Length: 319
Image (cartoon, rainbow, N blue to C red; front, side):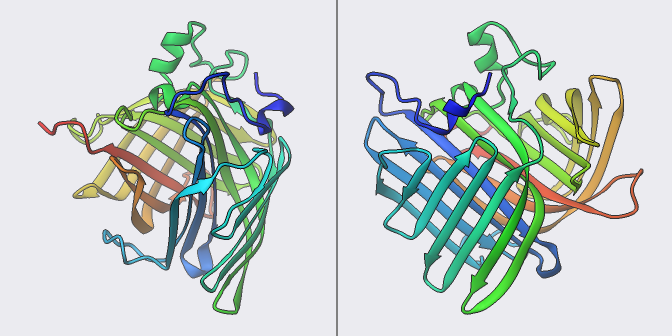
């Protein structure tokens, strides 16, 4: 069960070099076709913090063809996980489990964004929340979608507000997005292929999901559902199944159709195209195709937006 204590470090007495605590936050500005994300990884065993600040505004399969990218791997690890400032310009504060304030200032880019929760944190290992949760710890890790990297993990949909400033031009931020937070052993040579996909139509309707991903399977059979929820009119409904059919250009997603079933047997259907896309080198041997998707639901007249993210471990032999 997630508690207020979980905004602080969970460092074991003698952490291995692989111990990691991570946070992922994103926001989008649809009228400018812009997606931005902030990601950090604390590694207590080696005394370093990595962070990523990335902004994209077009569909591209080229690393340099982004609006902005700042990735630093060797910041000193902070004293507190709930509040820190890193030398490269990123500042972070968890005001509580449900409220976060992130700021960034470097190279002509300023970000000032607040993330306020629309729901309790969704613990993928809590059977009272998630119908896919496993009681046995080893099984829970195997079925997490990302192996031991998600040994402890929650997702939470939030309202993001603030300002993105690029070369003196301000862009208001006001969107619904989803953050996550994880801690556990995150081995750099043992990443599991996975997908992290969500759609935000309003404060009253959000879908978030995690899938295992098999890049060698045929279209429509590549994804195996692991965890997820629908936030519908203020109620969190655990998902118990899902299927994905994604059309790609190489590894890059272009169009996807997804169906989910929640605990009350309500079906959720979304279909969407990727309006901007960028290769994200999440870790040295874990590349990914990360896109902002424009989603449509057959039950709604207005589109929603969200992340479509497939992780492709590069140290798995291709067959």
